Amino acid sequence: MPANVTDASFQDEVLGSDIPVVVDFWAEWCGPCKMIAPVLTEAEPELAGKASIKKLNIDENPNTPGQYGIRGIPTLIMFKGGQAVSTKVGVLSKTQLMDWVSQHA
Image (cartoon, rainbow, N blue to C red):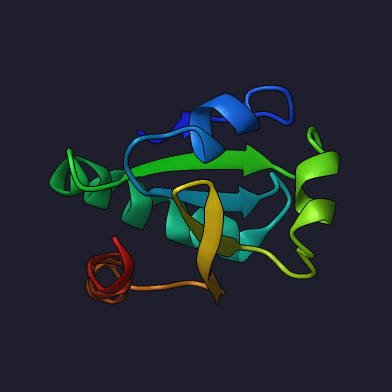
């Protein structure tokens, strides 16, 4: 299961990561967020060594989503070398997720 990241740990765990990181910006009340959660959990082991997946709850961590202009959830942002390199909004299938990651990782 993807690890949680917070406003406090975002710099170290995401921006400071040696490998690309996909951050799922989500909230407990979000239906589509619950739909994509199993996709992320299933994809994570297949990405080992190539990319990691982290989850950031926007209700508990309001600062980071604002910095990246999050307007709708679920929003996935891929970070590489400390920079946001690609964004996807909405639910993705596992195939769509894996294709997106492989294009940018």
